[in-house]
Image (cartoon, rainbow, N blue to C red; front, side, top):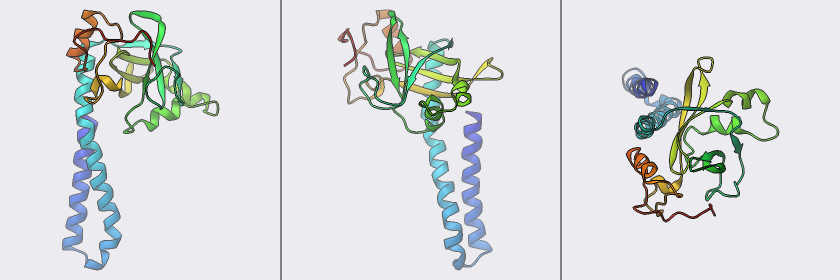
Amino acid sequence: MAMNVVGLVGWIATWVALLAVLAVYLSPGYVPLLLPFMMLAFYRSFIQLAYFPWAVRMRRILQQYPWQVLRGVERGLGQHPEAQENGPWLAFGNPAKPEEKIPLVFLRTMRRYWWTKRIGGSRTKPELKAQIEPLWFAGDPRFLGVIAAPGREGKAPKRMYVLHQRAALDRHVAPFNWGASAQDVERARRARARVADHDNSPSRMN
């Protein structure tokens, strides 16, 4: 969050500085030269602002779920056979049925490139894949969670990213609980996930 604030202030300051230089020191003929840099600064400021709601959501999730350090998490770039969405995914054990794997798809494009490059396929370099092994996870894959890569020699999480089932956050999709217990549902609700008032969950994902 601190780095995000620094980045936001920095890009805004860059935009203002470029505008001041153009207005005070340069003639209108320099506008085409500086305009691309001003547009980049504006765009980056917008990206930094867009991250704040997700940082707040991340904090709420971490207040409800402890970190788990997991090894050998299943991953892929193509369509998971049991996922409702298409895209890169990570699969975690169902808390109610540990032998059952529930995929969480990277639904947001913002800041996911770093992760998809390391999830990779057969051509991905082993040293890139190793950067997310083991994987840090806090959450419930039936609803939402935070993933992170190991940092500080594996003693702390870094590169945190929110994953979620679409129904857990999208108001256009009917919420469902995947057979979660009342305690699990209440915990997910405190993490600000959308949950059903009763268990209308399918036995398996379609």
